[in-house]
Image (cartoon, rainbow over all chains, first blue to last red; front, side, top):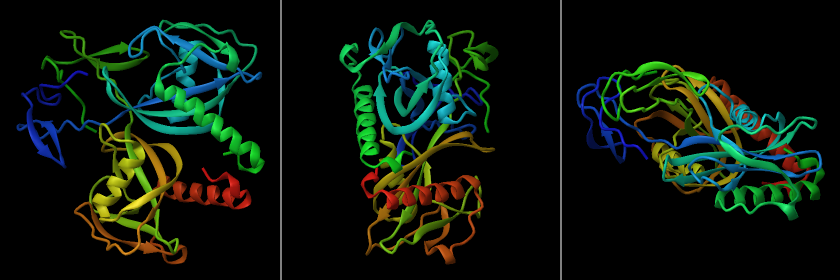
Length: 177
Length: 177
């Protein structure tokens, strides 16, 4: 994770100080404070009409070469579910509709530090071809028995959480959120 | 919202460029790019055992002097529900337990730009005194009929969303998430 040494507002060197309960870098000249917040990421648990899960193989860090759920950073100005669909579309050319919010989680990665991960269940349109962009080396829809192994603990957890929510919905059909 | 003019890594002036689909400031010298992501905020729909809602009056921008739900920025390294309880505790000295995730929303404010707002329902411990910090000028628990008017559209929406989720739970008791 890159650390900041200079003030991005006035270019003077930053100093360490105890501010709002934490050690933070700040600028003595103009008063700018480097608050470090989790970076928001949206992840798609995306299925086709046969309920096969879309799994992609990452072509970049973090977790390069690992099988994963598609997703990426939210941009300024977008609703989180829109960011989820945008990332899905950019990585795979697939469009979809958000069916539900699965959950929101913290994950730490070396490269970026804290991530705030928002996970949605998405149902993708049929009749669209999967076209992978440069962020992805392989990808496809897999039934549960044929799925590549997903090693990222949070992505495994999201798959489990979705299963739990679907079981709840099945036992009380009126409750789909 | 403050804009950046200098590279926080090497202090050289930033330039505008078209990067990853958007206009972004970047450093030609060291390659640093200013990605702008929504700032994550946690908000508490906090009730006591009588189901009265905790509403506070904000003593700082954005929305200074407005009645609102308590909350604040998530810090690096914390789970979002933990950040929600921490903010509640800092602003009001009250401890609580998260009962459910209500939802996640985008909000734009002049001061900070994009916020990513995570809302939780929290049940606070009884027998604790409400002690407000400097961020809050008034506060208390109010029944629905006696509540001060909340003008922040997203906070009104979160209250409505919680009502909708509680009605769903009431109609199918097995579905509480």
